[in-house]
Amino acid sequence: MTSTERAKLAVRSPADLIAAVPYLLGFHPADSVVAVALRGRQIIFAARADLPAPSTDPVEQARHLAGVILRQGAEAATVVGYGPPERVTPSVDALRVALAGAGLEVLDALRVTGDRWWSYLCAEADCCPPEGRRHDATANQVTASAVFAGQVALPDRAALVAQVAPVSGDARTAATAATARARLRLTELVGQASASDLLGGRALRSAGVAAVREAQRAQGRGVRLDDDEVAWLTVLMTHLPVRDHAWERTDGRDRDIALWTDVLRRAEPEVSAAPGALLAFAAWRAGQGALAAVAIERTLSLHPDYSLAVLLDDLLRRGVPPSELDGWPSVGLPGVIRPRKRSRRGRR
Image (cartoon, rainbow, N blue to C red):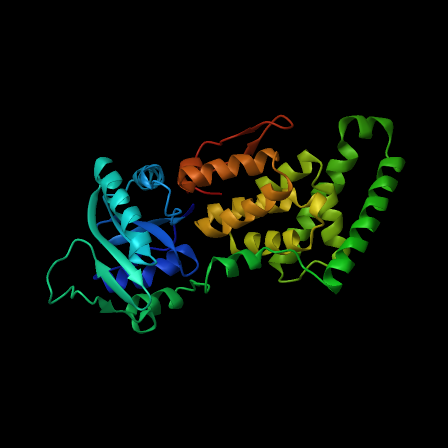
């Protein structure tokens, strides 16, 4: 499931809503059911799931999506199903029932198949003819507004997955060699450290703090890290206090997302857990649930027991809004993560 909270877009018609959905999700959905949450006439959130297999009862999935929408403080919702009618209709019907059962007003229920849409709730031939209505999102004002606001809708979810895919070819060869050099450098660091520094982990943490801060400074200047800098950072972040320092300095800023995307793509598989989880956290904080989801999927596929990734995966699946955990994380004792009290500004 993908849940996403993005910039608010005004909708005045079903065609507007259909045009808005790809920008809420970050990609154009296919074979999907989407629940769009609204306050008044403003879209505030969208939750997407794949259409279940024909032999699968969609009720459980529908109840889960309805719970996610309810958690956003929505007043109403519209359901949009993408795909052939024989697959879309059971999911749309189940989600309508689940949303109504959760006390939410269902404003409309739509099916999009190809370049046409139909409403399950409208029987007026003038506005909802049996053959459906053609839609052209490129000509819609909502699309223009979303593009003007800097939002992007990729062709499909596969394109989003490709954004976090590991580099290949010469870039992968260079990353592998750099990681080998970073491991030797780490061995030298440990060998040169005093017994007290090793016992307290100070040598590793000091090197890690310096690497994290330099990486974030470089990103702020628009300078891309070289292979050795990325490798050194990823090796050091296997030490949890270093990861936690990076986590405390990560929010939903564009530069955070850009940094951890680049580091994740160039990280060797065995040291990719921390950058993958940090990218997911930054994307979640920014309301980019789809990007957070694919980052978590990649991380858990390689590191299924990585605790931060497991925690973020649970937050995404339950549709927990970032605002509920403003100021999180707060790192006190080593390895102890707790929410901070919300500041007056609400975010760091």
